[in-house]
Length: 86
Length: 433
Image (cartoon, rainbow over all chains, first blue to last red; front, side, top):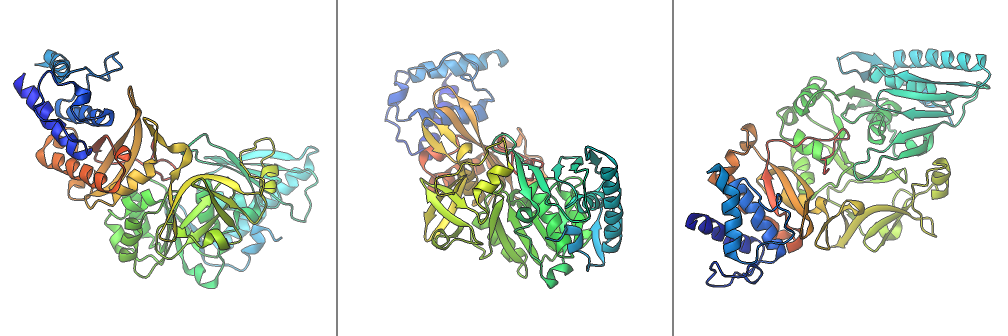
């Protein structure tokens, strides 16, 4: 869980650098994603980066038309998507 | 006007080399075309309703022979991938008649369209000068398409030799070019980029290099100038819809802004709302009439044709941005894939690039790029496994930062995939489908 969250946070920092966004300080599980500093384009890039990392894009397979609200929820989406293979 | 067959009467020597290496001389070509023409004429005169039919094409020599036989005898010639279809009137006489040529567009950015041409409109860009008869043209475009016909007609009407280099992959084609010592090549920028990576491209000495069908960017033009310093290098802008085009030969991308005032080759140019409109010397009315029921050409009240090519102007130069109907809509922002490709191609690590869209639930569409890296990576399979390695990841990151420097934020690719090769379409273009 911690590893997964660290990987996601790493990718967020990278995407922020690439996409000219500034992340807020002290991001934790309760941080609301749209207030993290990334916008919708930034999130599209983040999901693409994580697809490289984990070989899975949980959102393309989900019916959800919106991203999870908080980082904690975002991490658990990836956790459950990665679960069966681990 | 003289028939095409009459126009080549004085030529001799090699005219066509087929894909299996057979050389056909102008003497043989003329004799075969004349006798085939008589056969068609007699058959048409024997029938009450005229003669319509289709000649299945076996090779380039057969294609050229059939074309020369039919032109100015047939009312219509329709070019299809495997055959030439024709309609001859029953009262076919000894005098020549005006043949209408029907050619299909490749439909790279839309549905294929059937475009009508006259012999003079299709030949309007052909150059005939004595020294051009020395050239050996490599044909890498399919001859039934507009671009391929231009190469075939340029070769034949100037007395040069045209070599069929259509078979096989890029390596086969470049070997064929080396074997036949070609000295002139007309190809898409995508084809040139791949060709420059082949070994034979280093050994060939081109005297004429021509690019068309896609946007010619500055890094590619620079690479061609340095590889072939003695060649005359030009990039051609052609609008199939308008049936005309112009060539730029100053080695720079785009064309001089001045041409918007002065016109070029009798073509008048205008930019309206970032779209290039042009008015050919033959009026758009003629083109529309020729297309009869298919009104494919959009003309304004002054006779200018909408090319659907988006342009931007900077430093007194007009640059092509891409096809207006090929834009990717990222959350309401229009992205030209051609422009993103050109930025990626300006990165030193990249040999080829393809930019396309992917549906996205929130943004509507997102921009995806596939890139082929320059050697040595090109020799090794760069698949799923290696893209996970640190170096591939670093390259992706570097490319993203390169894009960030040169593109608006919303134009940036969401993802850059490193792929081993990029296939070209039949018309030699990178497919964005």
